[in-house]
Length: 479
Ligand code: GLC
Image 1 (cartoon, rainbow, N blue to C red):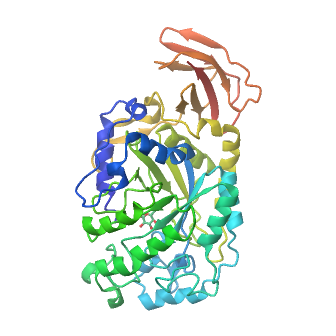
Image 2: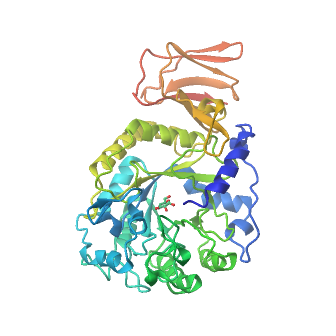
Image 3: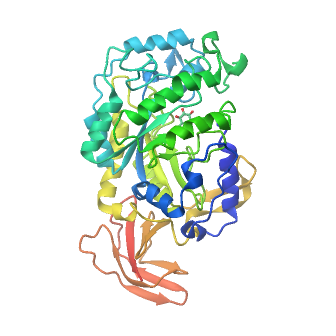
């Protein structure tokens, strides 16, 4: 289903052989030039790139929002629970276009509050939001003059949640980006569809209403809608999040989109446009790469349960502990964490999601210094190791994460996030810098901890108990 899995796997493989220090030093990444229109990544200098990416690299934690008409069936169609992710229900249940489009007349999410959602992101410690402006179902969650299948024109709600979020984000100092399914569109003639089930009509369509020409779809819907999104919301979007490119997105067609993106030189966009463009960011989905992507910006996107779009019966929520460990693990490998919420058809955020985000935010309000604006670990082996016997799905040695500690760093600090509490003292070998003092971040007095030099490192004396049940941060001041 995910065609970009292959390049990601290839990158992972290259990361096996690299020393972990490469994560810090960075490496030149080859951008393909097999496309006719040069993108900003092809032409900017390294310094320009650093400036463009700087807010994003500092941010470390963002909120993904998958919200659309699919929140109405919420995983059930004609009385049957449809397996897999909720926003794919139209495809997975082979719902005819007319039936799916009819959902719009019922969509009236009066419990939606941009203020509440942005406040939730803020209290979770998230610095940016990326919301589905249009998912694969083709329904625009914004005021679109291009196509009437949108939340303002086709629903009793008549409001533009994207505008409301933009205004609220501006007020609260959170950045806003738009997810836009540029390639798959299951309700527009000519839009692409990934194959699922027994869809064996040309282009994996399951309804003749989907048939048409991809370039025409791009010229009459996707590109005009992207112009609306890029032009109608002031200083937003700061990110365009593309998804699921297919072979239909020939380099020349992708180039037309890039021409539009180039008019917005501060924009950040991901690696899922297609047409040989690598974009700015790698986007590992539902997994954390063993050692990050040395030399590349990256963002792991993940769900809290097993779906992006709301499913009424998916209650398989990850624990706060796991979410926090993921954030720390990702930060220690130099990446960002884009963590999803899936509001229901009334616009309400599921309480189980809001609750976990608040808890992550509480930890960050004490320990955020160890996450925001930090760089990848100076060590590397603490993340785990490759199994000598077990293989992963690609037949490569399986990475077995270790959950004792992680590390992040700034120019004059090394942060050690301790998951398991060592008895008496913490020992570090092969210190890359000289440590002048140490303290626990959650200790407001920053009481110095006793340091003892050993033959191959240092011992840091610790109190008897952790200050936080999930992760206590040890700070080393370094020179
Ligand atoms: C996928 C899915 C999609 C989801 C996305 C998030 O590729 O097609 O439904 O939006 O990943 O990363």
